Length: 562
Image: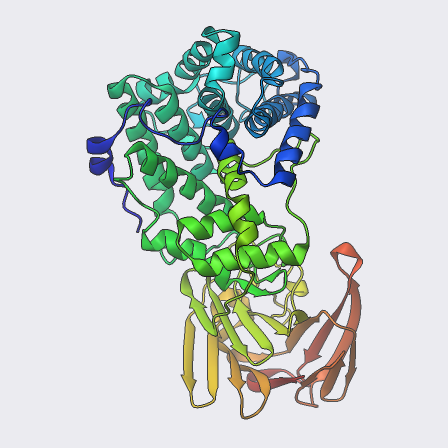
């Protein structure tokens, strides 16, 4: 468990003028190190933001799409202008930046939590992620571009600080006894923004500590919800977002304490970063239970930064590998209604791009992995990659079987929220229910390794499953992958074994041939093979194998060779 070191922070907390969180825009030694293409992109985007008209926000439109778009475009345009000023080093974007700062500060409300109401409830104790991150953008603008803004008027930064005091700091102090709730699944990001505002905008030492103490309490509650072994249960995309937000928190607290408080060396944080490496299959493919895609589009700058801060050379190398494999770097959209990462991440990631480019591209693959907190088992043998995985509540796919040969999928599910599109059995017509739970076991010996998962708890009581052990055996002496299903039922039932092939498949008695991958099974099983359309226009091949008659027990093997 990550330890929030409040005592050490209190003893070593620097004043706002002493701590250095990011280099200012006029620190040209730092910003001149930006990779040239990235600098040009940031300047170009700021130029487009400069020409963007400030759309009005009408109270009667609150909660509607045009209100949301107008609000988001203001904040995104301000991010672009700040980043462009840092990249260019001139005052060209400062007039537009000043106008946006004043417009956002005068905006009646920064919240979108009560989207269904005509106007927001100012007595609501829900912490809105956009309100927090809007405050963080203003806070960082006040220190990044302080000299440029002061050249226009010394009152601009003062106005920012007074607005942040009213909107975020005073509520943090005055609502000490209130049970705050953070809206959605962005707790870590909201806390990161609150920490930034507290450290940058509050100049009184006592009040700054009161704000920090509240933010640290929220951070501690957020950390306690996370799997202790560093795994992820709601998709790799959300996991990376949470890990990056924790990295933001820990980086700022390290700077605020003059390096005395370092939480990026905590085992749980390192394991959270390591889980990204563990989930990598090959190429751009990842094992991603309950996630959006098996080929998620990660920001390689962000992955590299995580690798540096968690001191994981393997993650740094993976970021470089993915960047070169992709052939291009992530670019921010010039559609300002699309939200981009928090501004602190944009700053740190941009400054690290040069080191990412120089990082050697390589992949370090772990042979066999058991991640109990995310109910995932992974094994590798020669050119084979296999996984048994389990979704979360709402994504019933316990014991879902994945098989890769080289860097191409042979069997892989497409939707874990639809059990009949996952490689899991159906028992007596019953699919799995959204109550995942299973026991994991790993063993190995001379020339073999076995991954085993009990999938019985994933079925409803009416299915009558006493025990169902699903095991993958990787045996070099067989040059094959063997999937074994051994089960006992309380009464005879029809059983269907299902496999989602990602290759052109042809089925016969006891064998399936799929573009070089062969699968052999008990020829007494009846075969049904159908083509399905998958997202992106890909054709999947759903193979269903039926027991010849109802059975109360069984022992079936499926052998895969390349």
